[in-house]
Image 1 (cartoon, helix red, strand yellow):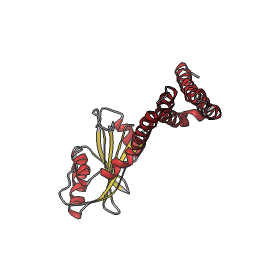
Image 2: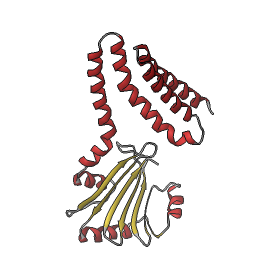
Image 3: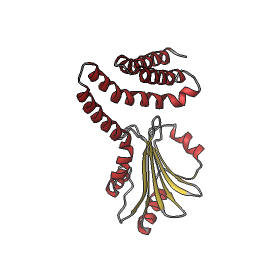
Image 4: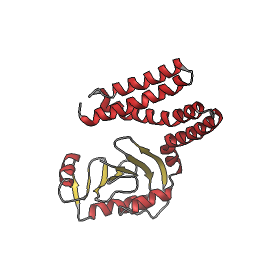
Length: 232
């Protein structure tokens, strides 16, 4: 276990003790022991080199968000302002809920205009109307933004021709060959396989959501366009 992991463990152990101490100090001894003990166990589990690698980010997020709501209430109650504590904690709880729901809220608010603007930033232009089939974004470590469109026959034909006539068109390639090419000085390639026509970009400039690796696929089967932006 490295030094940074031990520091993180000690920080969250202190947070766990604080979450348990405040109810305990206010007369809720059993509640304080249960809460403090539970959070301390999560901190201990995070020390495990294999188990903790995957679950520690979730435990960290849970502990921080729980503490944001839990600690202020008991602090105000300790100093005789329980009513204010309830109000503050309620406001913070609403904020936490909105924070947790924000990825879905962004998905719901994503429009065809947003999709069109993102694609035009990568040299993909849609002249006709299209259907936004799906859109999703999120991830704790690796962030992805993925959406899929059903484009018109005219746009489909033009986009395929643009890929095939591009100076960086590679012909039929599999992902291993493309990966090797993008690890050189070349940052944009266009190619096809038996399923899709693809434009792949590794940019030196990140978008506002942190993504810099972009894959735009045009399906040969159903004439859909899929956009995948990621930070890896």
